Image (tube, rainbow, N blue to C red; front, side, top):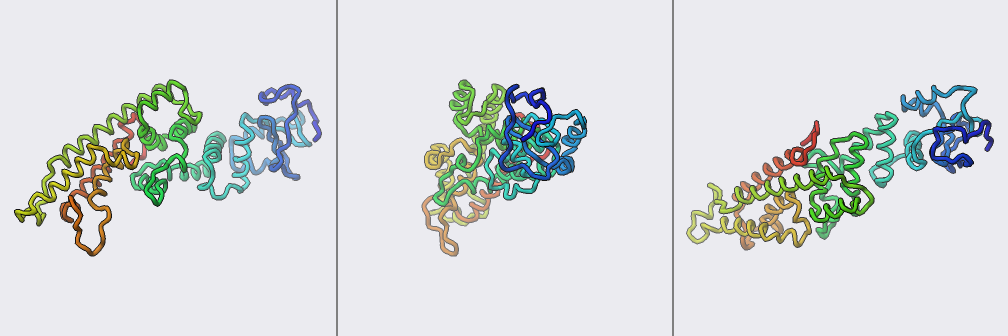
Amino acid sequence: MALENDFSSNRHASALQEFEVPVRHPELCFDDANLAVVTGRQYFLVHQGLLCYHSTVLRGQVEALQLGHALALEGRPVLALQDTPEDMMYFLKALYGCAFGLESKEFTVISALLRMSTKYGVDDLRKEVMRILLLSWPTTLALWELREKKVTNIHGIYAPRTGLPHPLSIINLAREVNAPELLPSAFYDLSRYLPSQLVLNHMNGVDGTGAQISYEDLLKVLRGKEQATRFFSTFIVDELEGRDPSDACIRKRNIVTQRACQVAFEAVNFELIRDVNGMVCNRNSDPLFATAESLAMQTREDVPGEENRAVYRACEVCRLEYSSVVDAVREDFWRRIPEWFELEVGNWG
């Protein structure tokens, strides 16, 4: 490597000490490159045309380099940027078309690409990264249901943290890159943690993964959680307590079975209040799940084509009527999430 100018005089590369010389990146340096991009303690030898084609921001910075006065590395003009070498590596790989299969990439890569594509105005890359993130932090209930199924194994064990980043990391990222559409589902996910744990995390300044939680966000989480809990309690009172059988229920016409469907719904009510589903599935802080579970209690283990002889099971007519109620309640719940957590989102639900 030949230094044609005193690189240490470049004040924009503040991460370097005066006596330090940046190290050549072992992978992203091309023999026919005509630009040296310096980030931190590394530099990349890349093509000006590629960067300028994808980013008007980078084009402006490249054009601002004064030919004959710019610092040089290996005979190429130097563009010093305030990014980490890791973020720049992911970003350059994406621009060179080497970022296939982003769905399988770790959150470190995805978050870096979103930050860099936002900062340098690479709209196509940002849209693709947002599409991937919205699969796990969606704006619709249907996609939320799909995400929940993906993080539930064949044994019914729900383990989102093994396949998804911590919701607080998503909240911080969404604020950094101005992506408010990610916030409501992330706030709701965060609210499912015990409030005491959230308070403890705030006092410690971290969420257990290194992401900080602000006092304002903590209050929003707790207030939103309270609103969601009240909504669920109202649902239990209005739709389950003393629920009458359907007008078309055949059982109620028989003196022996006339209270069978009512007893079945009373059993569901008791299960929810006792929170048996929460004790078993560890999802007692998830009203969306608990509302759906109130129907699943009535339909689980049904055998198609055979008469349902399970104890405390409502008839098919009553279950279908209750199913429509559950669907409407869950849709209403989902629509209210941004309001409960005091978030403004243009496209939700």
